Image (cartoon, rainbow, N blue to C red; front, side, top):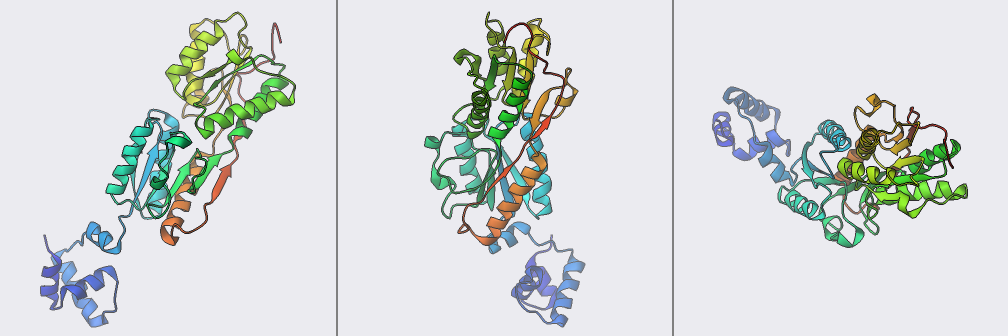
Length: 338
């Protein structure tokens, strides 16, 4: 394999001249440039991208830390981020925190070791668990995706979670439901808290209060949602409708309904925030709000590249996307009691 010294020897120039031609980092006369390029072609010299990037102080790597790769929603984000990073001339390195703050900290440490140029992070910890030095100052350009951390000065790209939950809950209320239960996400996460707040706001606006025992956490996990839904729907005062705070939990809730011998929407109406690939094939079709995942991901990558190029001194930017309401067949008018 030819080296830069081989090219310099063949072209009759210094290695500095070869480097200047390869990196376009200094003026080289047309005659010398032609000789260098001819030698590169003849020797089939391939300059090391790693070496060039190190010299420039860049790795051309962007890191993405998602919360749960087993959740198809995050797999979709990875696909969208890969395409966006490539379009910006970067390679993507993906980490999975599995909703565990310690795994997230290990990922951030590894990202620093790899000298990534920036990171898009779906945060999983509570505010008190975060080490702000991982995101602030001159450590690394970063964008928080889907969730926020109070007091953090990173750029953020999020969904209007309160609006998403409010839209779905209002629809259930319009159908006459008053005993509305919910399967929430973890309430230390801004997405989990925001979706519960949106549901409570919608109910309060109609003068309705949920029963405390009808609010259950499903941890954004399908199997947990399955278990708590079974427990909730076996109560004598079970709710007539369920608002489920994400797509994979909606799958768990629907499985529990079937296994209990109940019918949706005749016995229990179900609506959710968030979607996952294939959920439109469920029968009944799920009434839900959806994230503009591709647009959110593209915006996160655009903001990150902008910060990489223009420095961390820029004021933090916050972009919030609006959800779309998708009407399915999983909700019906309240029957029996209200």
